[in-house]
Length: 273
Ligand SMILES: N[C@@H](CCC[C@H](N)C(=O)O)C(=O)O
Image (cartoon, rainbow, N blue to C red):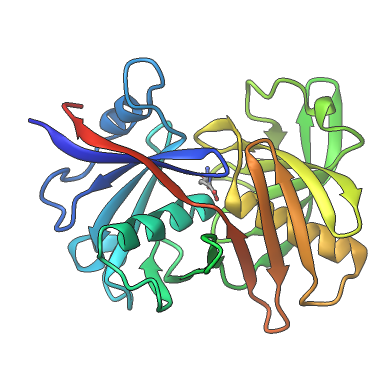
């Protein structure tokens, strides 16, 4: 059988989108299918899969006040609560397919609840990721280096470490060592350097996907950690550079994190995987 798919990315964090509006095409969407689709040699290739499904068609979406649900899977087939770049790409897809009105805020269900997306006249997409949880200090390590890190939750778990140079994180072929008592379900680890006032650059090792070119929730966690370190007033906008592009992020006076960046659909087709 051939299944429809699309390929998209946000700051080069790339995804296979699977339209499965009533959930009948992909059933439980197995770990093996997700891995095959994300395989960069034998599959389509991606950091994760976004299944496009109605909230009513998936147990995780039941009761959420949104028509559509982003059923997100990491490259290794594991679930995550949220994906910040993915949800912008998801909104772009809904609009391009005529499934959502771009002149109105677009609610999207996730395992972390409903997020609201707004399309700008400049072509960028803003995601309201809600209130961050600042959960204290921890440590992360790569061979030869250990850093203090800030534990921040954006629906999914993050450890943010300020480092002297991004190269010090090394090749990041393995997940950085972390406190498994704090992060029993794994963690996304961000390494950050200062570039200037309200301007940082980062690398990320994503839980379930390895080092990626960008992570939207990770960039938001970094922004929150930087704003706390700077004692910046709420409402201050930060620029976060990632290997795959730049995101603009604000922690608002009403305690919400707004992330703005690009979101593109670059291909569509059918797959036998
Ligand atoms: N790339 C994403 C985050 C995807 C989920 C993450 N790997 C996790 O397991 O929590 C983003 O843009 O936020």
